[in-house]
Amino acid sequence: MRAVLLSGGGGGARFARGLAGVLEPGELTVVGNVGDDVEVLGLHVSPDLDSLLYTLAGLIDDERGWGRAGETWNVLAAAGGWGGEDWFRIGDLDLGLHLVRAQRLREGAPLSQVTAEFCVRTGVATRILPATDDRLRTRIVTPAGTFGFQEWYVGRRHEDEVDAVEYESAREATPAPGVLEALAAADAILLAPSNPYLSLGPILAVPGIRDAVAARRVRCVAVSPLVGGRSVTGPLDRMLRRMAGGTTPDFVALSHKGLIDALVVDEADLPAEAAVELVPSSTLMRTRDDERRLAERVLEIACA
Amino acid sequence: MRAVLLSGGGGGARFARGLAGVLEPGELTVVGNVGDDVEVLGLHVSPDLDSLLYTLAGLIDDERGWGRAGETWNVLAAAGGWGGEDWFRIGDLDLGLHLVRAQRLREGAPLSQVTAEFCVRTGVATRILPATDDRLRTRIVTPAGTFGFQEWYVGRRHEDEVDAVEYESAREATPAPGVLEALAAADAILLAPSNPYLSLGPILAVPGIRDAVAARRVRCVAVSPLVGGRSVTGPLDRMLRRMAGGTTPDFVALSHKGLIDALVVDEADLPAEAAVELVPSSTLMRTRDDERRLAERVLEIACA
Picture 1 (cartoon, chains in turn purple, green):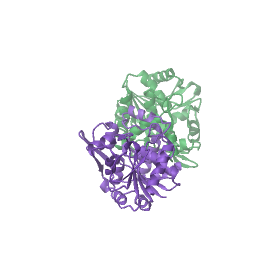
Picture 2 (tube, helix red, strand yellow; picture 1 turned 180 degrees about the horizontal axis):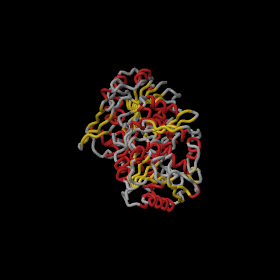
Picture 3 (tube, chains in turn cyan, yellow; picture 1 turned 90 degrees about the vertical axis):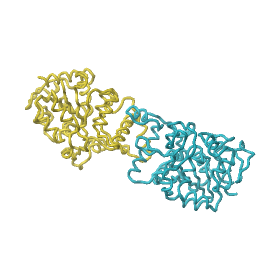
Picture 4 (cartoon, helix red, strand yellow; picture 1 turned 45 degrees about the vertical axis):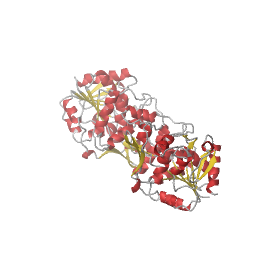
C-alpha cells in the first residue's frame, strides 16, 4: 500500500504521523510545502519540512505545534542584541538543524538530499520530499500590499485580509527527484488537512505535480482542515470566506477541483453537499489515537 | 595619552580591560589577532576579537576565560545530532554574534566594520581593530604534520610539539583601516601578555605593522606572558623551550627583537638579563585590581 501525502506543516504533520503509524515502514511518501521557506540570519529555514521531520522523528513540541520539545531561545536573543533580525522565532535546538542544512546547501547538496539525510539520522522511515529543490516562494496579496509569506504570517501576524496568493518562481520549478515517481507508483494520493492556498497550493503550483494528481489512476482523498467551518489554527476560514465565498465543505472541495475523489470532513460540517464524495469523520487530532483513527479512515476511503 | 595595544585573546583581553579602566574613553586602540579565525558551521569565528569584545563589554565568562557568561550549549549539541561539526565549542549566546557577523560579512562589510558595529552596540569606547580584514591563518608545523591553528589547538588539544609557526596569506594581507594610523599617532605602543608566536606573530606578520612598530618614535613595552618561566595558560613555555631554547625573560625579549624598549616581567622571573630594559611587576591578573595595577605600571614605563 504505497501512499503519497501532500502536506504543509502543523496539522499535516500530525496526519502524516498517523499515517506512518498505520502503514508499513517505507510505504508513505510525504511531499512537503516549501513556499513558506525563508532566509533568516543567512540560514535557509523550511518550516513545513521541519515540522514533518520533527513530528515523524518524535522531536516536535506537540503543545506549541511547531519547533522542538525542550527548546531554548538564547541564540535569537543574543543575535537581536547584536543587531541581527529576531522577528522570526527560531529556537536553539532548531537552529542546530538550520546551520547544518545551510552548510550542506552551500556545499551544493539539494534540499531533497539534505532532507533525506536528516530522515536517515533520526531513523524516520517515511520519505519526506520537498515539492521542489528550486526556489519557490509564496506571496500574499493584501489590500496593504504584497508580502512574502513569512513577512505576512509572522511579521504582520497574518492580520491583513488576503486577496490572492501567488507562488513566485513556481513555473520555473521542477519537482524534486522522486516526487513524480512516487505519485506515479502510489496506490493512494492524499491531501493533508492543510491550508489549500498556503500549504497545498505551492506544492500543486510546481509544473508536473498538479498534472500528475489530475491524471491519477488511483483515488485521491483530501481531509478538510476546517471544523465547523472554522480553522483549527491559522487564517484559512477568513481566506476561504473572502476569496471563495464561504467555508462549507463545497468551498473546500472546490479549492481542490479536479484533484480529489473524496473529501473527509468533520461531523460538525455535515450535512453538506459538494461535487465530490463527502466522508464524515472526526478530524480534530488532539491525541495520537485521533491521528491514527483519522489515518485509518482516510486510507479506507482511498482504497474504497 | 593615546595607546595602541597589540593583543591576542584571554590574558591580552584582561590587560586591555585594565588599560581601558585607566585611560580615558577613546584613548585606547587594540589591534587584535585574526590568525586564529576559523569557519565553523559556515560561520566566521574570530576568537581573539570576540574575547576582546566580550571582556571590554563585560560579557565574558571570567572563570572560563573565554565565551560569554551564562552561556548554554544547545545549538552545538543539536547540530552534532544532525551530522554537523561539533569539535569547536561555540555556545548559544556566542553563536548569536557569529550569525550576525557572518551575515554582515556576506553582505560585504569588512571585519573591521562589523567589529566596530559590535563595539558601538555594547558601548565599548575602546577601538578594537582586527590586524587585517584580509584572510590570514596561523598554521602550526609539528612533527605530525602541519595543521590549521584551531585544528591543532582544539582538535588535537595542542599536544603536538611545535617546530614552526606560519602565517598563511600574511604577505598578501593589508592592515585593517586605522591600524597604521593608530600606530603613527600613538603615544605608547604596548604588546599584551599574549603568545608571541600564536597571538602577536600573526599581527606583526601583516606587512606594514611590524615596520610601523620597528620605526616607532615612542616607547614600546611588552608584558611577558610567562610567570616563573611558565605559561599561565596555553603552550607558550613548551614552544619557547623548543623553538627558542628557554623560557627566561631574555628569550621572551628576543621574540620581540627590535620591537620593544622594555619588557615587564613577573617578579618570579627575576633576577634576569636581557637586551632590553626588564621591569619587575606582578603580572598575574586574578582580579580587576590586578589588571588595573598592571596597566598603570606598563603605562608608567611606556611614558618613562
